[in-house]
Image (cartoon, rainbow, N blue to C red):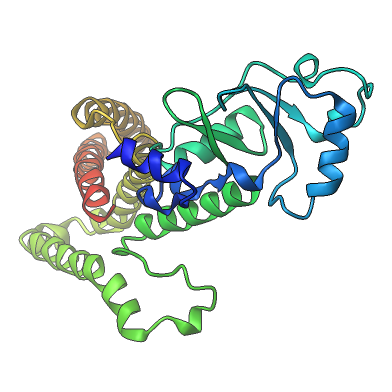
Length: 306
């Protein structure tokens, strides 16, 4: 399959043969970016830039290839115009190249560009033949798209169809379909929680002060759960081959330690503020259990909507 796609691209067919959301699908073909062979001198290159500037879609870097079309170097366009006209591009180019394979997920491409502070990333095949580049404007578009999707995932919105520029163009039913499911789950969860609390109605009447701390426990559990969900979604979108069991165990240990620290602090506040070690212990244990339960739920919730 991969070889068939490469053959079609070499024969002049476009990059839309690559799967969606990959570097190959996102890239600009090498026919529309500055590419020269390594033996050319700066004078000839600057003339070529002036002649073909209208044909190229991007003009940040010059990509240097050998006779077989393999990428061997990259040079900044700005740097080229600062060089002596008689020297070869091979003397100016940087041989340390950051490139990607066409099958790589587009978000990883954008992350790589940010990490290395570069404006565009070349796409090469397994033999290092240049296929095209992912340009700066497409990197920004990817980041915007992925950030928007991450935000919707964190809000519990199913398969967001909000890539339309004008929010008023989104059908009302589609918005409802995307937003309702996890809100219904939250409603059911709230009813179950109220039902459970109902079993302790008599005890709460005798110890009304306990009811005052319920919102604090719920808020802290929600805050820790939201942190875990946010990190999980972000990590999973960047690294799709993540070992879920190992990752979940690590997050569980971290959140367990967080819950211990928060519960201990809660216990001390209640102990000194209300002079009741028993009340502090009950509330601290409640917070500990609630936070751990929230951590168990949030990654499962996130995984189901990605």
